[in-house]
Image 1 (spheres, one colour):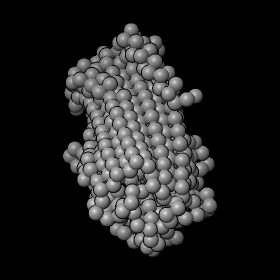
Image 2 (image 1 turned 180 degrees about the vertical axis):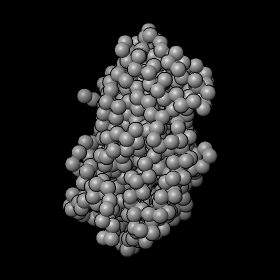
Image 3 (image 1 turned 120 degrees about the vertical axis):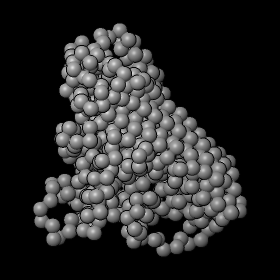
Image 4 (image 1 turned 90 degrees about the vertical axis):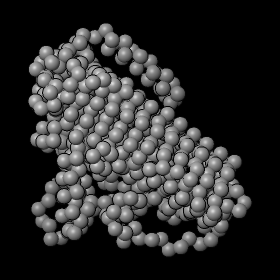
Length: 479
């Protein structure tokens, strides 16, 4: 199905869902015992209202108030309506989030459920102008505490998996789900909105604010993970990691699952804070296909506008990727591609002295042959990019045996201190490009990168690559 036709069908589905919700029976969680006083744990009462609504496809509403809750599960046919004046506040007790099978950071494992879940359901919605607040600082602090003990033991890579933190919203193995309508999503303990193994999902109108009361580690905004037919629009994001992120599995486990992320539209959104505007990876194993992102604004607190990241154990591919009509204001790096990202996190090796460890450590440490481990990004189009106040235009590094191939870049207007570099490239073509640089772009092969404006490029051998594993943990996380 062509992606434009799918968008029309998605819009029709949203309209039908809205009409169905408008005529559906309403179930007030207060009638099932929810207090909304911010003190009483209202999990069971909210879930009882959802379960009742599931019998006839109803809408669950909450009277104005703050509803302290652990994990709740939105069922098939149900709309959870979080209206203005309503806050669902996440419990700070990890035992209030049941352990369930899922995928987390690229591997299948058991993990705490999210605060709000659509788990193996169909035709459901989470909508309204209210707030879903993870109150996540206690989980951020627990992560840093664990990581400080893990780093000296060579276990930086295990930290994100062992410090189990609840996501804010999870849509897992589900279809025909809508999230949005003006929701404020804040202070997630881990990723904010994780869409995994799902189809026909629309996210329309969310505000994400995770840097309140601190800067939570790995508080991604919207992660689209081995899913297809996804529409994300009208998002306003400030987080402390990837903002709009596409994922498809990690290393051997991701290659075993082999589910791509495909047929995705991301549009009409702003990224105010985060690791990058739009990110592919680092979980690339299942591959990316037919993805378009456009009308994206990226501001100065975001270090990278467009980011591709992987590692030589990930594998996977990216093809028919289209990114256009980006505005970057003070974003330090316009385009970064790194295929050897964050080695202390990316490459798992279990120290010999550790004999007793969880099964998923072995999964993470399963070797991947180099010929299967390097992701192949090719046939990528980037056009209509306006960037002002940048530090560097391009930071592009791949592997010579699997070059970054057939990138087409057109109508770029970039103001930057340095041009940076484009290495390990093949058949790159620039057209209608304006570069205002104090230092030119360095390339290795004039035949591999064509069309850069005269005076903006210098051809010279690439210097020896810096070993990123020699950087501090903090520096690796930042880059």
